[in-house]
Image 1 (cartoon, one colour):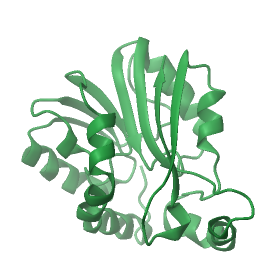
Image 2 (tube, one colour; image 1 turned 180 degrees about the vertical axis):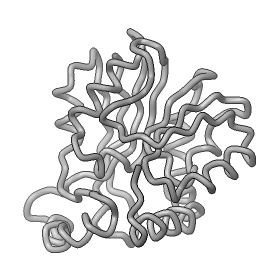
Image 3 (cartoon, helix red, strand yellow; image 1 turned 180 degrees about the horizontal axis):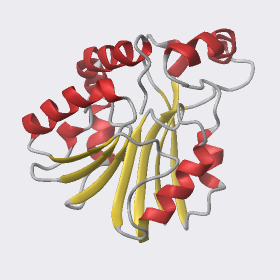
Length: 208
């Protein structure tokens, strides 16, 4: 459980404050990525519950969120959107979920900040049923030599401290491709946002 008395509340406030902006930027993409979800799902790092609006009412959601300062707003948003919430203050590297028990796992802007992304993906694969899907949207390292890449390198250390381990220079696409999924579909995109360090992103759907 993350309990830093400064960064924990700050990040909880930031993600809650940006929810409307994130819906504006990601709404169409998330609606496509999270369509036809089963009734029982797992979300890694739901933050302030920005993805709840894309889930059908009555969805049973296991939410893996290590920042305890996010939990009150998650519970409120779950009631607002009719989500049956099972909230767990765990890190993604060790999911308290039985093996081969879930059809769909998803996250957005999370694999950048976990301590060990390879271990998190290994846990996702363990928990997913054969043929189960993992969907994610993640910001990634920009092309070497680009202005965005220069900004990422310049602010990497302070950004990582402020945003609870968020690494601007991760190649998450390569991690997904080498993780052993039966199928990996990745769409690269440049998000039109004023937040320059996270403009380069991917949307991925992986089949176990």
